[in-house]
Image 1 (cartoon, one colour):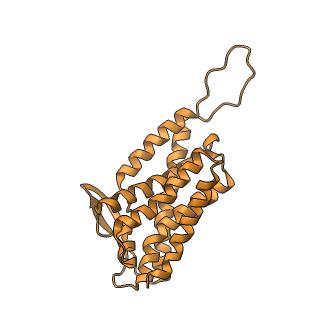
Image 2: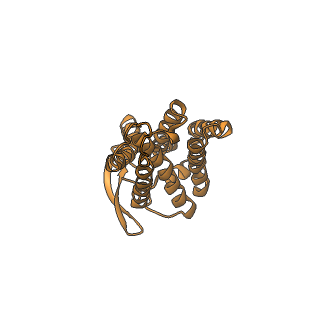
Image 3: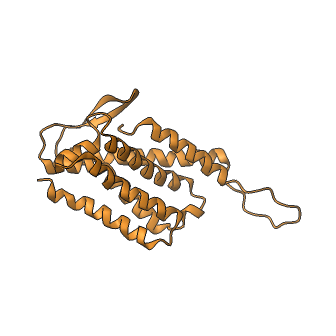
Amino acid sequence: MRVPRVVLVVLLVFGLVSSAGAQTPPEMPGSPSTTPSEHPVSSLGSFLAGGAIGLAAHESGHLLFDALFRANPGIRKVSFHGFPFFAITHDTGLPRSQEFVIDSAGFWVQQLGNEIILTRRPNLGHERAPLLKGLVAFNVLASAAYSGAAFARTGPVERDTRGMADSLKWKEPAIGALILAPALLDAIRYFHPDAKWATWGSRGVKVGMVLLVARAR
């Protein structure tokens, strides 16, 4: 896995907050009955399961294009400032366009997932849907973590943002900004579903990121 543990820790904190917020206050005597809320433990479990789905989807995006390009994917143990984790690797020396696609694929999956969810469920922030909330939270937080590593130019050499930057012959912080922009805009959409500028801004950046494949030649 390429996502640092700090993302999982923050995801757990968000899950605790989400599960606490899902509880309804005690009913007053004589008040009409309401639908019981989901148990906090169950809500937290669903939230974390959504994060796990997001992680699996991110890595599946890499594996899909690894297979399409016959890049011989593998798993390698790496570390991020002392935190051990794993990276899915592939052959070196690929054409720049293929390298860019493979390294970008995880972000494309995250962005597509958020787009589908926030388009179909624009008021998700006001719903009791911990699984979907966990998925959106992972997609936003993982992008923020990758962006931070890109801005600082730190982390394992296998990091996606470094591969994308090398493919485009860009500075890595520019890739960090490219990854962070739609994540921030999607976060705004989550909390402010009526912010149409954020919706279309996010979609524009996502489409532009895919079109950059033509530049990586």
